[in-house]
Image 1 (cartoon, rainbow, N blue to C red):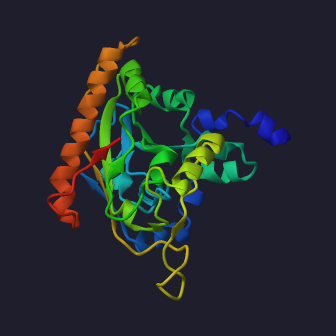
Image 2: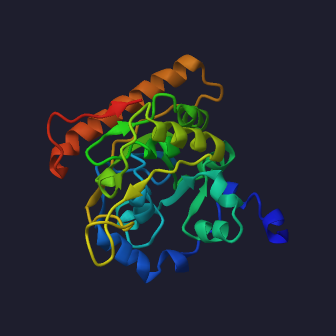
Image 3: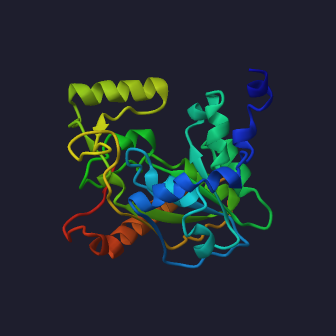
Length: 281
């Protein structure tokens, strides 16, 4: 408890990553199990900081963790000179011991203070990876569905404007294919309970299942489905210390348009039919 007291703000001050933990052999097996791929479509300038908007959340955000929290992805090769920080719910940093383990991967809090700290690095080279759909989106992480909770998520846009940080849409194809969920349509009793619990606790409880270790019928191990995380084109953002609601809304619309373009440009490569499209909520 004493350690927790004195170390309370570390997750909002860049965390405490460990290359030793990020290089554990288990993460190589984790990456190769699905497998997980990182695809770059545009070069980024290492003298600037960036915000990666990661979509979709899926059940466990496996693509974001595998690509940005371990040393076995192609991140360092594709984006030399950059350090990625995966922003997660502040709740996880209130858990003694687990918080320290989580920070070793390079994960930090998703609070405004934490994101601002990462983006304030002089000379650039930092990337804030934010899973914008959050816990709420995980409840819609069904195979074959592409529902993104983004219309009301505008805090990242305001932070980008105040720091003059470019926004980069990222779509992880295959993220929603790793688990099946108990059917929970809007208005059902299960969905109502899940949403109430999510508001109380801050994180969602999707009832998911997949395969077992030695059989494929039932279990909690994810299916072996390939994940292709595609990093899109950066959207230049002029610094505006006090952005107006109109400026925030304009940039938010631009971001959603670029995200949709990214999805449409790559969906057929990864087995998604032509008629499928993103649903923004």
